[in-house]
Amino acid sequence: MIQNNNNPNIMTDEALHFFGKISASVSHEINNIINSISEMSGLLIDLSINAEHGRPLDVQKTKKHSESILKQSQRGFAILKRFNRFAHGVDKPLTTFNPIVHIENMVELCNRFAILKNVKLNFEPPKESPLVNGNPFKLQHAFFIYLEAALNTIDKNGTINIVFDNSTDCLKICLNIEPIKNIEETVMRINIHEDILKKMNCQACINTIEESNTVNIKLTFSELLLESIEHSSSLQNLH
Amino acid sequence: MSKMRVLLIDDEEELVTALQERLELRNIDAEYVLNGETAFQRMQEKKFDVAVIDIMMPNINGLEVLMNIKTIQPDIQAILLTGRSDKDDSKAALEHGAFDYIMKPVDINKLIKLMKEAVENVNDTKQ
Image 1: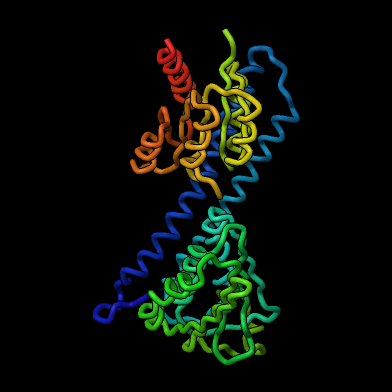
Image 2: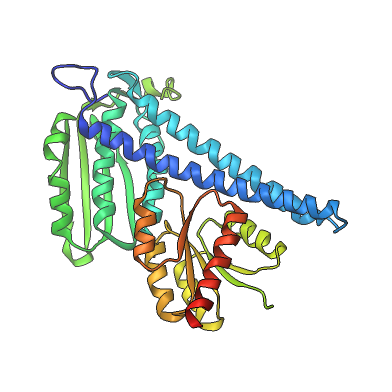
């Protein structure tokens, strides 16, 4: 949890804002799923009523719609599982966790924002799973700030590649964003959050390539030290 | 009396296919498309009485679709679908020239009633 200096149990406005955005997006997705299930159930009832009145029941169609209901239910369970993992990020201010699991989860949760902008999110998880000691909610929040800035300035049909850098002692995540409509605006949008990000011990190194309208952001979480792979391999399932 | 011709525009494929079939079972000539671009193409080919448009769609949102279809078929009546319970979407829909809006989940009887009212509204205006 992002802590207020005077009261460690109160989330900051920025953290609440972030939590609210993710919650609202998830609720929209769940709403879409329930609407689809509701409409398909309605159709099955219509077909059943018609069958009661002597119209032959199309078994293939009934099966297809029943399978669609199952598919939507599974989609709903997957979203709720991701949201549950996200929400539990605030449970402990300091814990040992696998940052890849949390970033992958955030990428999935933010995919709806990307789809609405016609942008593709690519996440390449590293082969080895490191562990870090720290605050998973801070990591998720900082990552979201950069991803949102990228989504607000990237061109339609663009791509954001998210890659881990395992070459150093502390956690580093790279966002490669292309093409960018306005590189200056992207940099400005990221720098707006400098103070919040400092509180999260997150620093951004921004590299712009004007020829290809690309922005590379390297996020360094100096407080999240990677534990050795040997140690972490026995704890890989820790989230 | 000829069948009412309805174009459903929503990116949630399973929702929109089920809605289309339910309208067909009620003797309405309903088609669906999954995005604004396809809607514009389809409207160049066929005349529709009513368009039912989801507000929140990727790339071209429902309000943009509404404005564009009015230039292709000025007589078309639009009903917007909204998943949000606040008044912002509905107010924007009416300001952009929609006949009305309806909240998701869709009450099919309410939707059909609205579509009939929309068509009658055009006929009254013409007379």
